[in-house]
Structure formats: C-alpha cells, structure tokens
Length: 268
Image (cartoon, rainbow, N blue to C red; front, side, top):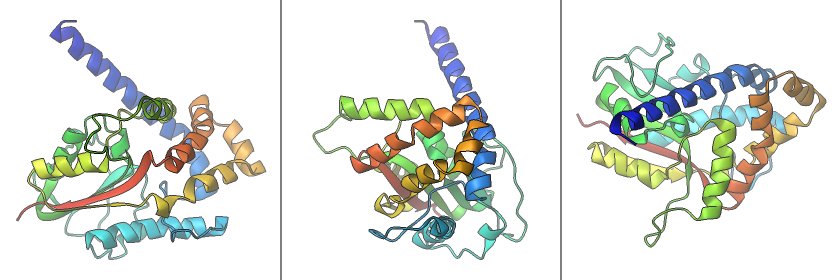
C-alpha cells in the first residue's frame, strides 16, 4: 500500500471511530442520566466494601474528590456546577465561570499555555493517538498547571513481555468493538509519554479495586424493569454496549483491565 493510500485508510478509520463514539454517547446518554444521574463515570468505593445502589451517586462524586486530592488540587466546589462526562475539563484561573465547548481533544482550539488545570475523566481510552492526546493537554496547560488523566488501561507488561497474551487481546478487541475504543495502553505507557514531554511530578495509581462495585451495579440497574424498558427504547449501539458489560467485569477479574489515574505538572 502506498503512503497516500495508507494515510487515506488511517483517516477513514479515524473518522469512523469518531462517528461511532459520537453516536454511541448521543444514543446512550439519556438512558444513563435517567437511571444514574449527571456523572457519567465510575464511582470510587472503599476496597472490599459492598455498596447499595443508593451509594453509587455519592461514589461518583467521591471519584471527583479523590482524583483532585490525589493530584493535590483544591476542588473549590467547581465540580458541583460541572458534571463530569467522558470529556476533558479545562479550567482557567477564574473557576467561578464555567463554560463548555465541544472540540477534538487531539486538536484543541485553544492557545498554548491557556489553562491552569487540565482534567481528562475517562476519555483517554477513546483517543487513538495517546501521545498526541497527552501532548495537546500539555500544550494548552499553563506553566505550573496540573494535568489529571483518569482512564481505563490494560495491565502493565512485565519486563520480559513485548505484548499482551493473545487471549487478552481477544477480550479487549471485543470490548473495543462494543464501545468504539482504539488500541489500549498501560498506565506505564502514559508515564513514559508524560516523561518524554518533560512533564514533572508524574504520579500514577491503580484504582481498579476502588471501582470494582461499579460494573456489577450498572448491570444490576439494567436488569430492573425501568432499566430494561429504557434500554429497549435505545438503539443497537447502546444494546450492544450493555451486552459487553460482563466482559468489562471479566477483564477486571483477570487483572487485565486497570482503572488508573495519572497526574503530572507542567514545568514553571
């Protein structure tokens, strides 16, 4: 295949991915908000503690709080007025004025060094070019700004591994097909990218155990009459995503899927 043909194929694949992601969330967001509320992300739970369905919304708010605490950021209550969907939240110095703008996270329409807090909540897994993704976050970050990435990853490879096992790749491919995800990476890959961009104070943590009650709770809510009837009113993309939820649990149980937080700071 010539270079031009390869570039065209890559562009077509990227456009198809974007279209699939947009349609999936346009189709499913109403269902999610109807059952789970504004926060379209995992909850943070104490390890080993079972949670009642009424605890899940508070766990989602706690996820926001714990992410900010881990990064050493004073929340200032801004998240009460800015529910976190799968998006990138970018805040300037005036946190009392919150605005929303739809844009491509890989080609952001913002000037260099414009923001003092950059926060990606469960959106990195949708980015086909992880290096470009982190590079754009770093580009729009002001000197000294904090960058927070909360995302799904696959497990870190051991020193003698060059890739995941075939059965692991097969499971991830099935999940990717259902949720319009490109290739996965590990938290260690994110750390390497951040270090290659000369970002400082890079920290990461595995919160997989803290989010363990989340997917079983989502499945449980889908099996209620309200959840089932709402799901049947959605399109095929949402239904296919619902059928893939047990595979997410399988991935977590096999220590293949990891829920990671990566934070860093742009040099002064």
